[in-house]
Image 1 (tube, rainbow, N blue to C red):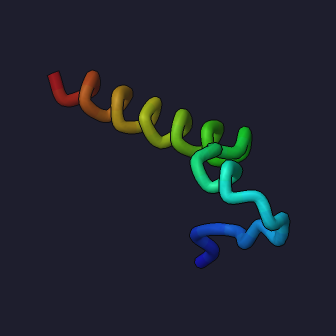
Image 2 (image 1 turned 180 degrees about the vertical axis):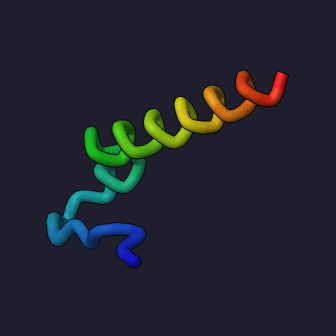
Length: 41
């Protein structure tokens, strides 16, 4: 299972950024949780 990527750029400011791919994955996970919780009502 892959949980992250290593960024080879030598810029410390980039350590605080979240990639578009990570945002999409997190959004999908939150949507799945929301749907599951809605179905439990």
